Length: 330
Image (cartoon, rainbow, N blue to C red):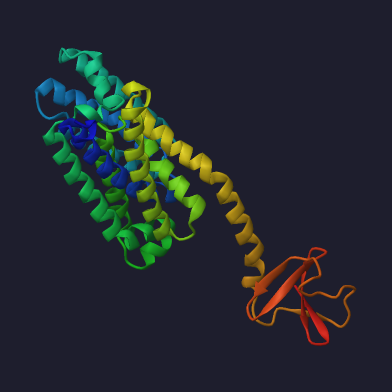
């Protein structure tokens, strides 16, 4: 019997797929708002939620969801007010979250190994109930993140413009914070609370290397998150006789994808920068010169760049376009 047909492995693959799709959805908006480390802070706070579940006998997933949402809303309100000591308040909140979680876990009589299942992930030990919760929460994140993408993007990109158009800025900012909290708790059994931010952000950073529009970045990040989650689980399962931990393997695979696409991203951006100056010129923004010391053509040896209905040739730091008896110079 193949290991892939075993119940625990089927549950792990389903959880990895849903987590890989959901986490980058929220990560795309966090990157757009330059809040890439927000998921990391929420993960610290969620440790207290997990510990409360262990103490009360309730489901650690649901208690973590509740505490993480409260913490995310507090983070957003502090960030919105932009107090001078806001970063200090956030630091106290983050450190207090993880310290309180460790303390409460000890009071609950649970071992550190039990808490590590949530800190570093334990995807192969998930029960059927855990998988169903992961699927439902991940589906909610994906549906809201994609369904409200025009509004969420407008708020993330330019809040003043969004306010002028009548959008409730505070509502959508808090909504993103809540979605981030849900994503953190969705991924805590897959990659762990201490690594969840990587699964939210790294696929987005990789997708940005290859795409230009926000929507293509969003869907590209979802695809890369799925590849990293599923691929990391497979590598951890079949490599080194199963001695690799799935959570760190997933994150390292995501980082490897970024490292591989980074040179390609540099090349693509270089090409775009070369093309944009001519493409952005108005139709009549030309200087004409009657003579030019070099005759440009297909075999002249200078780089040719398509510009509208004609071709420009790069020469001595300028772009020249032969037009009949004269040249246009950009």
